[in-house]
Length: 253
Image (cartoon, rainbow, N blue to C red):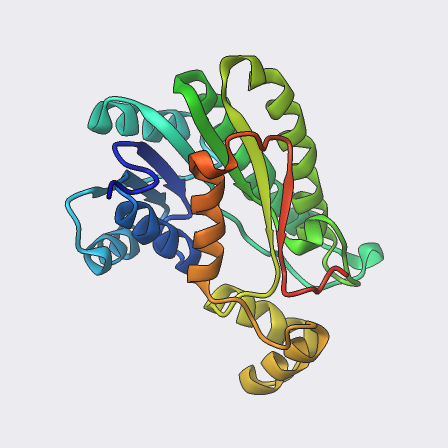
């Protein structure tokens, strides 16, 4: 049986991270060809090697650079002949600090990567995307909620909902869908660094603290996040646009 993404061309930013790699692997398993983009050349090469498929290519890309994002989109189209799927997944966290003390330079950096970076992916991907295409923007559970000390991260992830809803209305007439994904704590290095910084506890203890806050009492596996991205990229969600899909183990209940 053909895969759910058979013959589709896809771009994933933040492609060397755990969610990016898991999503690329899932896309390939469903028949897509994928360009993964990230800042670190060595990490990209390692990510592609770990997937082990000729359907995966990579390109060093800084998502805060308009020229580099445009080049990544162009490279995807040149490699695969079209662009069906874009997953704006690159992101940074920032610092843990009260709003009254938050360092402005860190705040600006977080917005540059998370918000401007996603906007640039949307700007250039939507120009090239074919009818039936899907843009997925990776936000966070704190794009719907928040917590003390995470002003930059929460602000950036809330902003992505506005970006998503605006773009969804603009391109619906072209048969293109735009949705955002809102994962809760995920079992990866990115999340564990956040947890240790927020709690001041060890890796194991901070993980236990966060598990205790989640009704399902565990972190998500990156493959579970990837499965949700596949759903949003596939025809299974063909009548879904402008939607905030939460994948948080009940954290936002």
